[in-house]
Amino acid sequence: MTDRLNTIAGWVLFSGVIALGLSILSGMFFQADKPHAPEVAGYPIEAAEEEGAEEGPSLAVLLAGGDAAEGEASFAKCQSCHTMNQGGANGIGPNLYAIVGKPVGKHIAGFAYSGALSGHGGDWTFENLDAWLASPKAFAPGTKMSFAGLSNPQERANVILYMLANGGGPALPAPPAPEAAAEGEAAAAGDPSAEAGPAAAPGADAAGAVAAEAPAAAANASN
Ligand code: HEC
Image 1 (tube, rainbow, N blue to C red):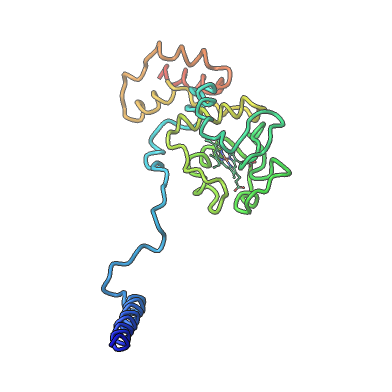
Image 2 (spheres, rainbow, N blue to C red):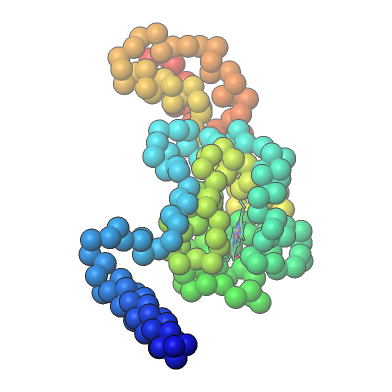
């Protein structure tokens, strides 16, 4: 009797195993009616910016009005991978002392840059740094710098100023004299009230770097 029970139990167990195996197999083959899992788990986190970047103040203006000390505070976001001091160690990313103006992806001889960056070409101009910090992936697809980017243009400018303060670099781009730009727009709109005389004064103060703009502004004002 126990023999027969054992036999029955054995067949039940066996058929269960077969059924399980079949259901796994059919699950592998017949997926059409089931919702498919995405091929890549999760979803990429993109820096939500870029749109409207054109509409804001120019990089030159942001740099002129920026603050290296605030950039230093923002640099906390970079410090897990980068040092900024002269001769500082490379981390996950290369040391960034005196990076502004240097060739892209070649600054630190001993650092294993990705081909995406070392083969990029060009120098770390203010514009390139701005684009890089906005979205490393967009600037150099395939880069090893897994950092989403800084979406705030002023924050990027501040960080660039902080880098510039550590090791120097090219001269800052001269921002357009604000009142000249304003008058240009007003004149284009045919607005005679464009002759905002006193507004020209601050521009004259800042004129060291923008002396070339001043005569144009004066000419505009006298029209
Ligand atoms: C998760 C680590 C990580 C973070 C965070 C990070 N970086 Fe990087 N960074 C890298 C790596 C890795 C590279 C080299 C990329 C390559 O070779 O593709 C790099 C490269 C750079 C370069 C180019 C250096 C050169 O020698 O050409 C600059 C400039 C830079 N990072 C600035 C920053 C700034 C500024 C921040 C913060 C706003 C930041 N990085 C945040 C890892 C990081």
